[in-house]
Image (cartoon, rainbow, N blue to C red):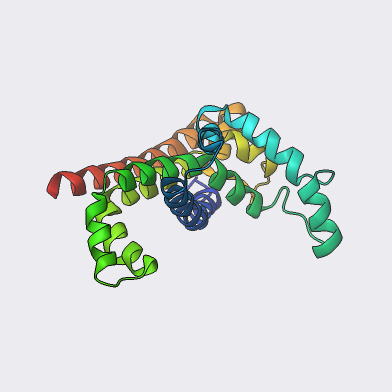
Length: 220
């Protein structure tokens, strides 16, 4: 284990935790809005939300590259107004992780919200609770198992993200190299020992997450 460079491990955990914050906020908000909105084109919007889950990650990465690259619309705005770029930085790895794991959070939250008996929320409203209070005191507690599942799956998905990350963050040792990238380039250079150790680390981390979630659900 002493041979392992721990920077990719620490960076992957940091990226996964930061991405989880964005995924949780955006996924829960989007699922709640889509549950309560009846608008034309709703099916198309939901398909768009789910698209990163079914597209090859490298395609998602290419789209992000076109958007945030130096010649992309977002990249140009960042350069013009903030004199900065996020391409090939840790922030790009966070963006990649957030985009590819968003559908998991969205779908889990959506399923959890749709399973709630609406009469329970209506009862809280008749007692004078605001929509904000109903959401936090009734909706979230009832939907919590689904929210937690979405969080765990999203975190694990971000840990294992490769295709989109390498497209927009690159493989810069000490800066943007995450565990999947370290595995790929170690294997490519025929350093199978290091690659295998990284595989063991990420496999143990993701197994622990899924096992913990399943154990919690079975114990309820």
